[in-house]
Length: 610
Image 1: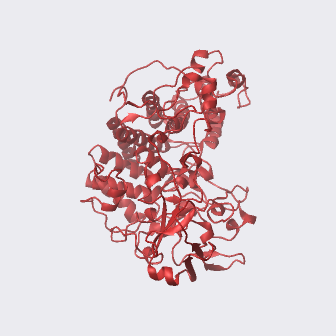
Image 2: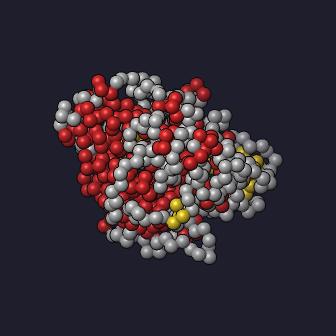
Image 3: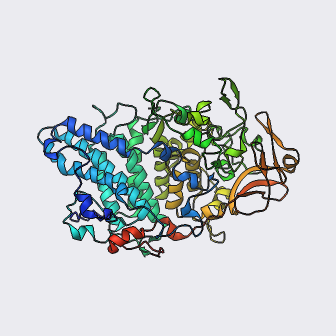
């Protein structure tokens, strides 16, 4: 691995999109205290980092909805404007504003001023809190890289007199991620595993295990991005290879994952659904997460958003998502299966995340009743259950804030998946690693007793991830099964599915969505179309004459926002909705508003200023 020492060039041009850089830097610190009077004890360091935790934890909506709601596995009534034809440009784009960079300023403020505590706290304590700060800097910097590619490395609070830095060009992505890796390595080496505000407090605090998990995630993302994208999408030029290579990053992802797995601290939670519906984060599997409190009236609206006609985008799982779930014998299941039959003898994670026969809810009178689908909640005939609390109050307008289920942001399962994918990518995936990762997930979470190392690629997955059928993707059987497992485990968790499509260079799936200009839903036979079908005791139909309502989909012509059947008189329910994809969209454009302040920012390859 190349380790090139470069003098730190602090770059706060990231906030150059503000109307006045001077105004921004003239602001009093948001911390409300003078640095020279603070950062002098462990208590000071702890209080400040606790504030960073609160700001850095993803919101409830970001975890449970996030960018995955606009992926191939989730249909929506209307998609994000970013994916809609002729709706998005650098002129209309937002972003690159104070709100995107203020958190980095808060971290830089701590790192600039925490030397006040040197000599007042033990060296290992000091290094722990420096590691926590660098954990956050790595996390938020990577988020900006995912969105914009080339950005800035900000490692101290920049003076408003630094005009060269403020109005300079963006820095190279490979350099930025090299610095991120340095931060992650420091955090993994120095953050503690026990002590005050380390392993207590409901999976909230940052410790070595949290750092290892984040390092596993980030290194895998950047490694695969370099592997599957032949050029830096900010410039259109080949990667320069000056710092860590893709293989170096894969090795780091594998090493970080292996260390966490080897610690023996975490294990897979036996009840998969509880991971997303419990009021207390299951500490055996959850490494970091966000909690609620009914006593303090700290709740969220996620159940209401999934189970609402008026305040929802009609989120619906797709057939392609459902097809990723194996049967209990470990075999793939085809798509032409009726809505009631396809849940039988299936990986139990399917019924934990998609409404299945036999599931119940509590009605307004407090009675336990069959949970019957409502077609005005979804565009596909399937219904999300992953984060849904099947109680009366969260599903009705009077109780929109009444969901109190806690939400994991980082799970041990993800680390196992990272471990397997990184090992496969560099030819180090052994049956032993397979058994402790993919096979373990299928057994403990899915109830699949046997999950042998795959010998042949699954034809459906191979076609699904292949852009050009004449030139099949060079993906092994194991690589495809790891992708299946990521879909089954992580969809609708903090944007994992969206990130996977971006890093694997298969964003075009969003446009083609398995041969359709829309999302595939439930499969209906000719008999189902003619006579309807029952689900949890209620009859459902499709009709060319009736309007779409609670129990009927109106079938019409294949125009945008209409339902059709893939074979005319039967087949997959298709919610027709055209999306656009172009390879420039692996990154967002630099907004015109930002370029007006700093023309040296440049534009990402393929995007135009007008």
